[in-house]
Image (cartoon, rainbow, N blue to C red):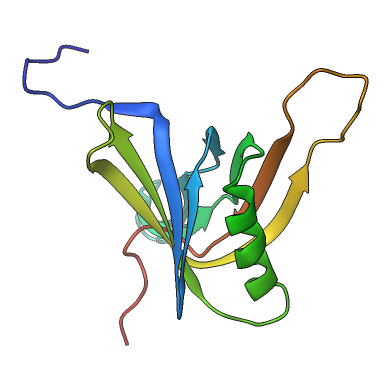
Length: 152
């Protein structure tokens, strides 16, 4: 892809996640994010008197659960605090996944996930005989990141 001298490029390895609700939680930097996508169902209509003509309309949107992973660090305690808050009480959060440029000064792009709820948190098995980094994974369900909600 051609770039000019003033083009800012987001780095796939520079992003952080924050949760905003009645209170705010900075869940820190993550090594990997998966499932940040959307698909649309297609509604098709065929009139009985129009031969083989058909019309297409946008149907429901579907959002995949977002899965975050990283090495266990001091930021893991921030996740535990947020999970402690959400494990029994229902509180709606907006998760912001912000993608930064190489200098980490300001986000180049971000996605706000509506009505976020934790689905699963896990840590890799620990083995004293292995020499590896412990990894944590956090999976989030959400209602989307597009402005596609009907306004009443």
